[in-house]
Length: 329
Ligand code: NCD
Image (cartoon, rainbow, N blue to C red; front, top):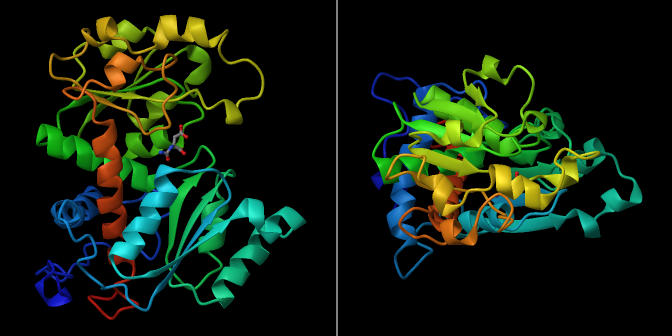
């Protein structure tokens, strides 16, 4: 598809559909800007299902650097695939093999990436706020691939796209986000995106794993799993993020599964056609039973991964339009 055939870059009323330089979070985005990114992603879903995957080279000549200071499977691979499918040169910087291990500061690393004239930088970091710090220092668009427990905006976008395609809408749906909400950037970005798009969001988990005052984000709080699941249209399960826990937040994995694990029996509490989601990686037998995770009628887990590529293609495209002189702002 050529740029000429692509959807309009600027709305007929002259309003820029996405007037942001970076994608550091869902916070601060207008609902129509979120919907715009989802609409843009739709075009890539069908094309990604075709035999020839590289159908567009709108990012040819641009360099995408994926700088991952934390482990990743899905997010890193899908940003890499997204960049390549649009013709970009993609370089992955893995921290285990970088000068960060020699004590280089984050700012120095950012300045190094900048000096190499990257056109897009995707960052994952274990410190909340690290991505914004880098975004403030470099000359190109920066995309947040997850910073600490703060935000993971492309995950929320791919989750929203998955829900919208499966349910036909987001507004008015009841979405239960269950498990380790406290340590989850996925939960935070999803709460922001789904409430902005009109869903009723519940957070469900043990009191130790629900942030204090979470209700201020416009969600309902449940510590009783069955009550939180009652009639839910979407059940989004989260992993216990033990790498971010200091001390014992749950007695044991077995007890956690008994109280907060999604089993087929438990799922009966939700709406009869409830969609089960998980950002991955799943810990089978802890927050989710294998029989639920693998139930293709209910589980959208692999579709979420598929939507991740389309959403990241859309984000890379939209954020580089100014550099490419297409509908710039
Ligand atoms: C999540 C993350 O890294 O925040 N995974 C992902 O991006 N698919 C959730 C998690 O690690 O549990």
